[in-house]
Image (tube, rainbow, N blue to C red; front, side, top):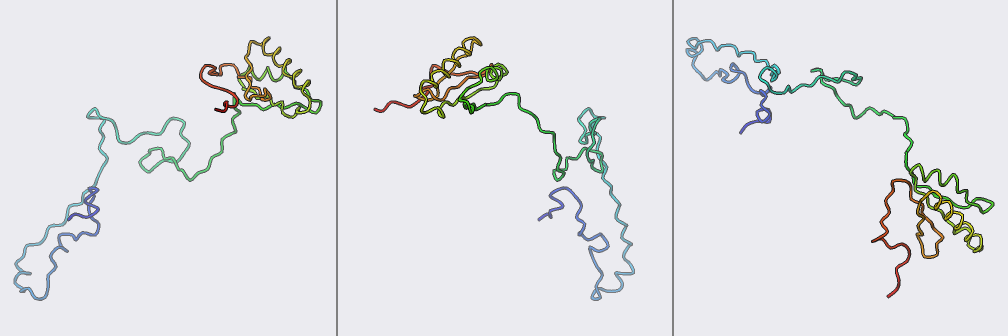
Length: 187
């Protein structure tokens, strides 16, 4: 049975050399020691990387990219050390989901909301804080509807009471054929 070194195709470092293969014991006759021919020295074998480029194949070693700043192996290959922690500058998202509620004066500022929608953000407008002001809720809905009509944007109700409104951003697809918004009717 082969050793682990043979499995990987490497010489076994613990294997006996030809001189150590057959040690002379005191039970053997002395004549054998005198008449035995000297054991030749083991040849020193060195392994060198094979260059497959000469044969038209691809090289097993890759040179690092031109602007490589990381560590390299002794063979000159780029090495990605996963133990090194590198911080990247935070990236600001281009498209976001915005949540808008009325301010202290119970107003919704439609111009900044529509500006964000035209930039691609999806805006959810929550009119639930105006629970005791039904006429003010209706005024906010009308103002949003008028602003959306001018910007050619559809507004969608997310609940049955029309207190959660969604304004999808530019290039946002909303499936109005199969999706039912609001509560399911009881059977």
